[in-house]
Image: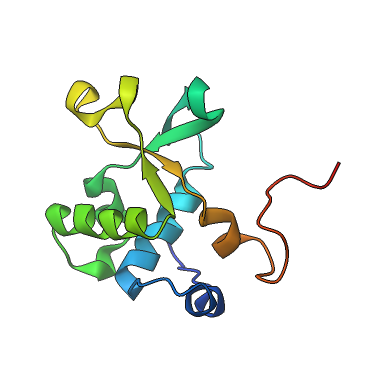
Length: 127
């Protein structure tokens, strides 16, 4: 079980993200779990990034206080996608072919997790 949930409320408000606490708790779990060896990940050449698979059942076991269904987890993940925190993989990793939905972290990920909102949106340092 994930013991703590970290939500940057100021960034959520300043960025105008239309997300609730459940959306953000799920995002916090996903962003932390993606860094572990236990997370199933695939390198996506076209994106030059890794895509991650997150089981709804795993999310529910790690966040038991949510008290929602696997179907509701998928709806909350859709909310994260609409806000640009996640991007559903297409092509070779299309869920219809793999029977798993793989996600890339979207363009809003770094703005929410790491950077001062007044600074550049660039993930890379200036050259």
